[in-house]
Amino acid sequence: MPHAIRFHKTGGPEVLQWDEVPVGKPGPGEARLRHTAIGLNYVETYFRSGLYPTPPLPSGLGTEAAGVVEEVGSGVTDVKPGDRVAYVGGPLGAYAEARVMPAERLVVLPKGISEQQGAAMMLKGLTTQYLIRQIFKVKKGDTILFHAAAGGVGLIACQWAKSLGATVIGTVGSEEKAKLAKEHGCDYPILYTREDFVARVKDITKGEMVPVVYDSVGKDTDDQGSVRRGPVGQGQDRGQPDLQAQGRGAGASRSAVAQDDGIDGPPPVATARTRTRR
Image (cartoon, rainbow, N blue to C red; front, top):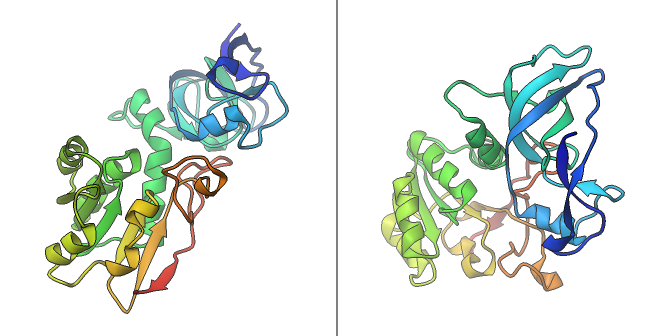
């Protein structure tokens, strides 16, 4: 019988158990898949701890994985047995050897993408897509500021924005992260812990500043109005909701517009927020 990591009560890592879990046949519109790679996201600690609500316990954990389709139910035409697929969102339970999923959640992986890559990049890739292609459509010639440029989303965003012809300015917290961001397309990594990033942005852009700022850091980088091109620019705060106000998550975004971690499906498209330049 397949196994899955589940928890019967909320708490620390010690509440996680390796349980035998029966996996039935897929029903209409469903597919059974065997997992080969599972994505880990920090938001899962919130479910485990009880900060975020979960289905009735015991509950599975995880919302992102990749694997091979073993069987499909009636009405499923987009995937077939043997397909390599990845997904994000849907019911908790990705920390498992096998599971049944709504087939509409599954994305067939192209030959050039491994299952490990698929499991690691679905959530972050979708987050990047709505940030730079929907909320603010980055185009050739734009100069953008991306805070946390060496994070999971930041590394994808730097590469993607660079491929679109944009100049990417990114803030990071260490020399090592600056090197990593640079290797992934960030033209100007700035150590915000040591440098005045507002002054650096002004210098890099020759006083023109930037049309958009993407921020998942919070208070340490909350001077967006000073770097956005006036009189009105756009600032996109992303990250977990205001956990800092609850005494948790010291690095959480102070005012989240869009969350990085979509739970019931792909990350939602956030509403662009404009703010008059201070």
